[in-house]
Image (cartoon, rainbow, N blue to C red; front, side):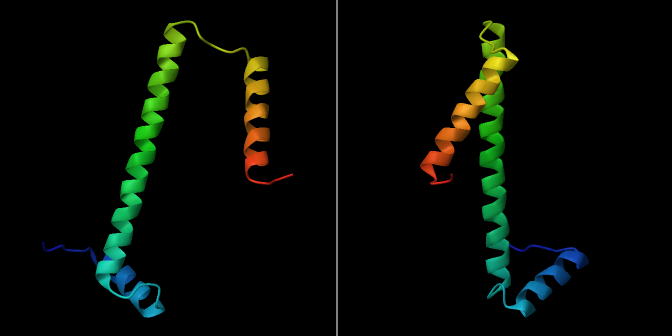
Length: 86
């Protein structure tokens, strides 16, 4: 597969190679593709969560602002405890 880069992208690749951050242009392209895959996975997770939230709204399963705050505080406390944060 041949890929044509814009002049700006070519310059960026050259700079990254000169800085020693990457060993080859292939390494740079592969890093970019990994990030794109991660972004797509994240976007899919967000879309799924939105779909769940919409369904919950349709079913009347909503929280009051107070309930939301309590739920959020509990989740934060659990996350902090799991990560050893005081």
